Length: 589
Image 1 (tube, rainbow, N blue to C red):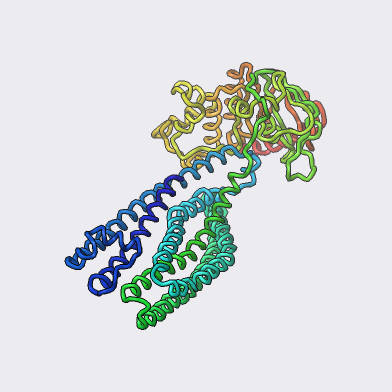
Image 2: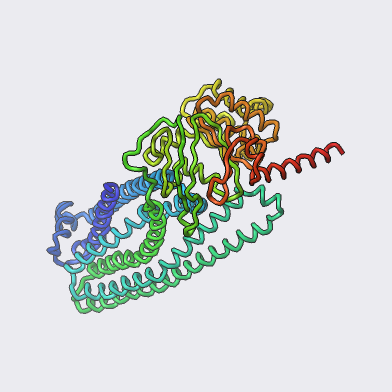
């Protein structure tokens, strides 16, 4: 804030110096070259006495040139100082806004990110922040300039001729009202253009992220057409803005030049009737221009203010979204213990009363490996999300090692529970860098041990650069199974107190699947492990298997126990067994 205050102060100095320079010309014309008596104006007297008095000026007319050059130097220094501090203030503000946005986005609830569009968030954090920075850096000074020039010019003009000053002021209210009406009409267009730009950014981001899918399905033409349509919408709105601005600038030019022309004509009449000197007429014309043109610039200021208000409003839509809050008094707690669900209900905010879980109850012993099977949308992943407190459950109770889940710190849960998703995210870094992200300090031995457990060490070593191999964006240079194994290794490095594999073995072959599960069993110890999968061979070795249907736990038991009963598990086993036999027959043929 102090930088902007300092910048406005520099603008005040610049405006004062700009007003003083024409007075030097007036003194030279009226009092040095002419025989007019010296004006009692305090500023005029100060200027004359600054360089030895009027007699010295009359004897050395070059003193007027010296005074003029001095004021131009003052103007240059003030302008430099103004631009320097406002640039610093604008950049600091932009940096602070970006830091606030990024920090706040990290703290927003999981559900917010489920519905948010990445392209829209990027546009708000870049283009909208840049619009705000540009206004503060460039237009703040224009507002100050208009105020200072108008006040200083009127102050000088009133001391010269009150009537002509009132004539010079006649168009100011018209220009101001005209600018305000323009702002009211154009602001809506700015908002539409900003939202159109966000949609364009989203289309671009989604298309580039999913470029392999686009190529695989031969949908390049469709994506190009979609982008062109959005780009045309954005262009039309931008062109509409330009039409508004063109109309404003041309109309305001007529008003401003009309104001200057009227002052000039009336001033000539006053000079002809000896009510005004030639030097005073010159000062009036210069001051009228200095007063009117900044007022005209208010149109640009107001249009940019409209943009800034829209942009800042979109920024604050993010900042005003409540951050995820923990339960008051929530504390870290040892997660190595029994997990008990008792009559737990859960529904999404958008599910319109449809329960995902309906009084679901079960108990898991410390160190057990639990497999979860269910149809798509049955709530398998949601069960894990509730356990991580990405969503908070409704009625019922969940305890972990005797502690109510809602009283355990969310950050602690997410630090101590390792989860591997079906579609793991890898950064565009080396494999080593991706693995090191699991925790702050990790040794090479820990990395190798984890990759061996995840059956990833061998294929990593086969790469020319080994662990220093670069993976493309989202791990695009690795196969689906390789990505899953690197993600599993990254999770194992955390030494979590609980492990969740959310269909994270779906892209590996059955042999590798078995190797990974066997290695996990050896190092499991007292770590409770959840395995979610649709593939029975992945689930069959678990201590217990949960079958979830319609938000309820309909069956549970070991592989053999579930096969002995008719139900979803046995039906899926029969189907998968038949398919496997068919594949074997085709292979033999």
